Image (cartoon, rainbow, N blue to C red):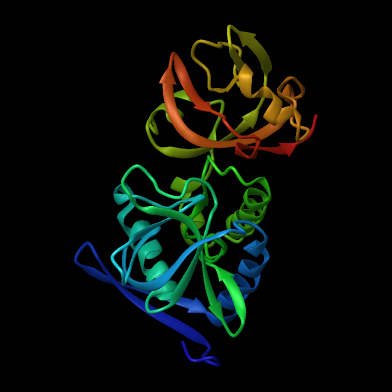
Length: 277
C-alpha cells in the first residue's frame, strides 16, 4: 500500500464470488502501532528467513523450505471459510517477500515439523509482531496455551480492542463468547476452540481436579477444570480458583464433553475476570 493512500483494497475469491476488503489506512496504522508493544515477549531469536508463500491464516513457508506456524494465536478454520480466507489474505499482505525474524515463544518445533515461533518483520528500523498485527486487525484470537505470561497479556489486550471495535471476525456473531448458562449450545462446539463467558456459581474439588462451575447441576452444566497440581500457577498471579465464586469470567479453550461441557485451563491467562464480586 502506498504510504499516503487512504484505502487498501484486497480482492478475495470465496464460494464462487469475489469479496473486496477495504482496509482504512488509519486502522492499519493503529494495528502497526499496537504491534510494536508486543516486542517485549519472545526475546530469543531462533531463526530468520524470507517469507515465500502463505498456507493459511497462521502458517507460511520460507524460501529455504521451512514451514512456520505462528505461535500463541488461533485463526478461523475451514468451517468458517470466509473468515479463514480473510485471515490468510491478511497474513499474505503482511509477510510475503519480507525478511522474517523468528523468536521463541514456546516449543520451537510442533508435532508436524513446523517451526513454531513469534514472527517479526523489521520495517523502517521498527520490529513489528505479525501475531499482534493479526490480533489488532481482528483476524485471530489469543490461543489457550501461551507459556509467556507477559506476551499473553499483551496479546489479550490487542484482542479486546479488536473485539470491542467489532473488527474482522469479531463482527460475526458466531465468534462472540458462548453463554456459560447454555451448556447445550456450548456442546455444539465440541472439539473447537471457543470463548465462554458467565457467572461462576461454585468452585469445588473432586480427586485431583478443581471444578469452576457455572451451573447448579454440576453433571450437566458448563465448568472449567483445573488440575490441582497446576493450582499454584493460578495463585501465583493472584487468580485463586476459590475466589472466583460470584464473579463473571471469560475462559478460552477447546470444548470437551465430560458429562457437561468442559474447558481445561492449564494456564491462568485462559481465564479473564470480566466483573468482580
